[in-house]
Image (tube, rainbow, N blue to C red):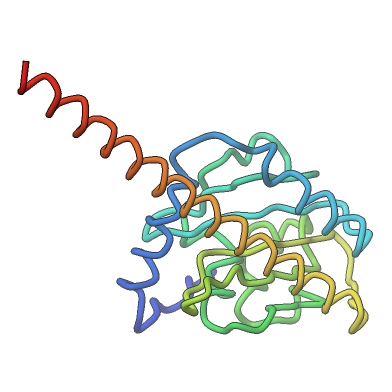
Length: 190
């Protein structure tokens, strides 16, 4: 048997536009997102945490803590666990991936690199899931309700930061265009 990717969402086109709007995949600002991974690890005591946005082809890792470097920043979407977290606004928590029919044939699960996975959706204010804040372990785990709630709030803060960043970039671009228009009009009058 082989690992089968998650089905594509009905609202995938709109979701992809929301991912694109963040612009986060096009500039390297890992230090902005490192804190989310660090806190996720601290909350759960898991050895690995990462956060990523998922477009139509890849999961772009914004930051990670404990993820092997050879995995890289871009992971093909069809190879990720996180693609399954795009289907619901609630967290995807798998205590033992070897017993879950969606994941038991994934190479990382078959090779015992990952047994526990929890993906917390990064949801925009207009309801689109951009990607996930995740933790994983190579042993079976359970998360308490309190830890789940803390990670939900952490992923909400991450979504807020991504939206604020986009708004800031848009405002800066608008201001720059206004300044260029004023300069151009001055030169036309000379």
